[in-house]
Image (cartoon, rainbow, N blue to C red; front, side, top):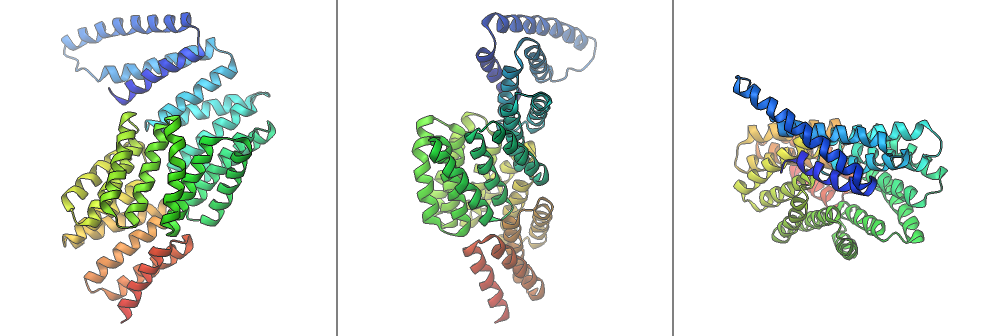
Length: 413
């Protein structure tokens, strides 16, 4: 099944929760008639020499647009807004970010036009903020989070406020401000403990694990992940399980336990491919590529890096594209293709600068420093390592900072 077919299949399942059986049956019959008529017309056009387009993919998109329009006509506003947000979440999960953003924006605009829909407005702003964070649209993400919190506060919705605090933590963590991130995660944790939101509590534990991993406290990170795991298994949250196993893999990778890390990335891939979550598939491929690159298995590293790149380009995740280029640069450097490696590192650096990710930027400068060192370009190597020291210190990446300082010391010796 194509991505559009999967989304549409799940949309039909959603409709049964929002619409009566008779309305759903009516929708299906109209769609069936439309498909039959248009397929016959397209077949006739094909026989007359007009090349066929991928009409099934086009028709899947048309179906969704028509269903959304009909739901707006048949459903009360509150239910229609809920449906819009759920379909937006489906599109976001499957990497159709452009359509997800359009649905969130539509819900956001509709909910803010009239009084009485503050909760729905808060949800729309929150989901849109999450999407903006994935795409490194930092200004818009922060704006949406502030708006979302305002609407949740108006309705005294503690769960919504906690979710905004959690996303604020992710927002600051992605930009390297671990202190601010921890403050927001702890606020969210307190809210979820008070309101007994067990799945959200586990999500916070996972996010705190990510901070511990960046700070180099790997055992604490693994403890947090293990505490989060039972709740995700209990609820059957495939998306969260895919994220959690990926994060465990990243910590094991930092510990240089490559075999165990690859096992965790495979677990993540198992969950993400069940639901065709392309972004999470890409993250698992990238994790495996990094592990194989560090272990010196260059063919597998390159193969998985390319698979990751394909996924990230589809979902427009430029920061992960930058990380993929960094891994490809490591492989090319190890193979002594130094000019090619330098191009990859420089491209990774430019993307990380553009989308403001200090940790990944520091890593790319560090790898570039190693390359310059191999070419006996001491001045250029020292400058790259100084940049990485500055960035690792800024984000509190303790182990990476020690490694960069050691490289600088060796250059001076």
